Image 1 (cartoon, rainbow, N blue to C red):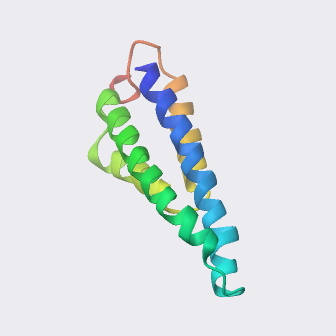
Image 2 (image 1 turned 135 degrees about the vertical axis):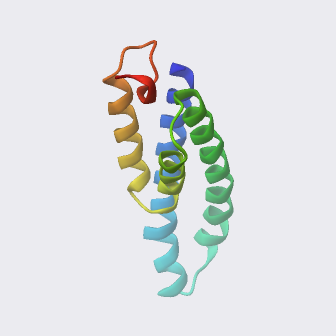
Amino acid sequence: MQGALTRYRIIAWIVGVVLIVLVAVGMPLKYAGDNDSVVAAVGPFHGFLYMVYLAASYDLSRRARWPLGRMLLVMLAGTIPFLSFWAERTVTRKWAAQPMDTPPAMAK
């Protein structure tokens, strides 16, 4: 179970950083500087990484027995800049507050 959390944390950070590069660097260059090279390179990379993020989020949510709504919110966090960092931190804190052998959704 700890492995699923670690995989999720790593990919959440990677997706967050790549999305920030895409939005903060690539989009201004494309629309203000008429240079779409960063968007052309980083955009598909972010799309691929987001699919990996979805898989890691799904794996973690099934192991932790999250309700569907929580799983979907965590999955959508990878589409908004900085939100994947917040979601990763929230998931990790909730997980750390529980005993190691009990998933957060099952703890009382």
